Every structure is written in structure tokens, then in C-alpha cells.
Image 1 (spheres, rainbow, N blue to C red):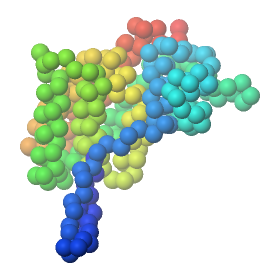
Image 2: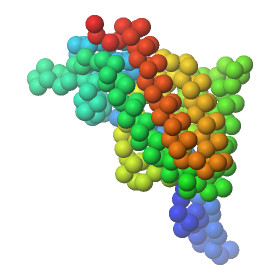
Image 3: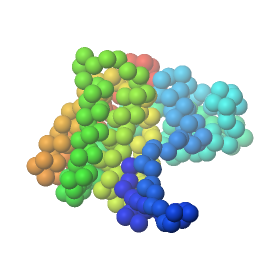
Length: 250
């Protein structure tokens, strides 16, 4: 969630009564594109073991299920080739690649390194308004995930955690760092991760508390350690579940 430059906060409108200044509506997360929908769906099929190593990606069937054209699916598959999740074979199609724990662990570790750089900048540069915004999103996430809280849809929990993550990872990141984080964060869709690793909710809660403490103390090193620990634990637990479900090739 980005902050608007001051010049974007209001807009003049001429009426019969003279100039009228209208505030901009609040920024809301944009709706996912067809490519993002296709990407999340394909990744879910792979990480849930529905499509396995060597399986051909059934593009036509997936297009029918999602109600979209084949082109967004092809575009999504290009990003998945880059992520080493699928391989494209000329004149034959696209197939699920052999996935091992090393690929998963490397991704989580690399994401942790980038996120550590971002939250370190956040802790050093965040002003009171941004800290208040972070604390409010943390409160909302805690409300949804505290032990004993009423059961809610996993999608709602995922969206709350993602909104918090999006803010703390991108609010003070440089444009290049923000781009790199965005390019990596869709590797494992949030709902897929949380439904596979329910303990990820607890790890996210520990990170929120550690980050808020780091913000209060203006301690960027503590924030960096906290996010790297969260990502490392997430990778290990995700691998354990994928192994248990038989996703990794023998």
C-alpha cells in the first residue's frame, strides 16, 4: 500500500457554486489480473500435489475451469518456467518440473534476505503515521488469528496477513527492492501456504510482535533477524508438508 504524493490527495472540481475540492478515495488492493489468477491456480495445483512431476499442463481445461482465455495461462506459465516449477518443451507442451526441497528452501531464504533489507529501512525511516498504520494492521491480523478466535475463512486470514506484509515490505523499500519482492512473493500463493502450513499463522504472529518491538526500539537488526527467521521457518515447514503429501519426486 503506497502513500500518495501530496499533490494527489485532493482534486479540484468546478461546480455552479465555484471550486470544490474532493478527497481521493482510499487506496484499495487492486483486483487480481487474469494472469495472476491463472498463476495462483497453477501453483496451487502443483503445491497441493494435484499436478505432479512430469504431468502435462492441461491449458484448455484450466481455461474452462477459470473462465478465461488460454493466453493468460500461457503468460503465467512463462513466469513459472523462470521459477523452475515447469518446463516448456517445443511442440509438446509445458510440464511440471521435478521439484525438490532445495528449490523451496532457497526461495524462502532469498525472500528473507530481501525482506530483511526492506524492514530494516522501514524501522529506521518510519514516521508516526506509518507506525500507527502498521500497528492497526497488526491488531487486525491478531484479531483474526489469536488462539480461541472465532473461525474465519482462510482467504480472509490470508488477505489480512498479506496486507500487513505488503505494507511492511514495501512502504520504505526502494523501487528496485520493491520490484524484486513482488516478483518473488507469488512463488507460493498465500492461501496455499496457510492451508498447507497452519503453523505459519503462529510464525507470522511472532514476526509482527518482533517487528513492533523493533520499531519501538528503532532496532533494524532485530527486525531483519525476525523476518529472516520467519522465512526460514516457513520454508522448512512447507517442505515438511510437501514431503508428507508426496509432492516431492522420489
